[in-house]
Length: 135
Image (tube, rainbow, N blue to C red; front, side, top):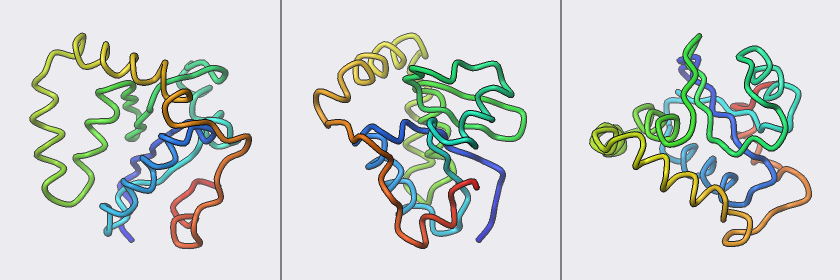
């Protein structure tokens, strides 16, 4: 497994977010991405390091070394780490102005619990996926 240092931070209580992690994992056979949910110690530590709010944080976050990308930009840059055709999809959608992308992103984020549900605790990943989670 190759580790590029890219870490995806996600809401572990959000069913849509958990499905997104599974989607990413299935399309990342090289292991380019690692994961941490926002509620975990590892997630909170990364948020604090970059002065991002650790409570009620409704953004997808991609941490690549010292670079932090949030909202639609973080999500689309994550696609670049996956197998084809996803890098091209991410690059094409990055052409859309961030203001427009983020408006759609924030609308989905506000409604995600109502549409996809919420779990009281983080879902337990499969043993192989678990190896990609930060300790």
